[in-house]
Image 1 (tube, rainbow, N blue to C red):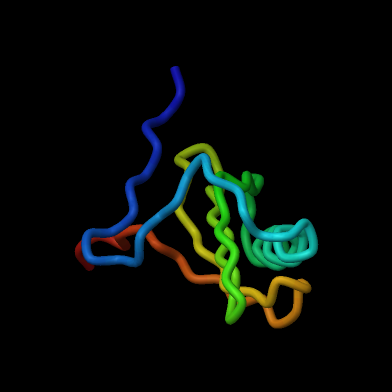
Image 2 (tube, one colour; image 1 turned 30 degrees about the horizontal axis):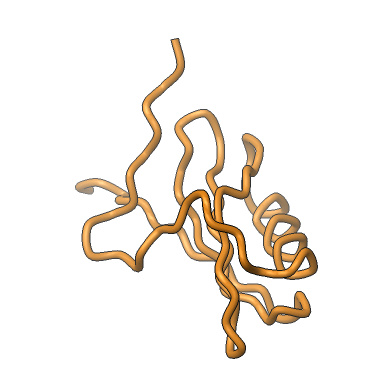
Length: 89
């Protein structure tokens, strides 16, 4: 039985799945950056193009932790941000 997929945290930026608009360069830069910082496998689940910064949405690991990456559409300056809830400490 697979684990449930982690939902994005309430109040976080919109999390896009199933729509792909960013360039291959943007997607590759984001996927590579996130894979270098996490364990468990990275799956790209959506993206959107913007002239300012494209956004790439990814899930990591068995629980599908949600991550968003802002990146130039040419793949420059990728920046990743965890979109899930860290829970109560």
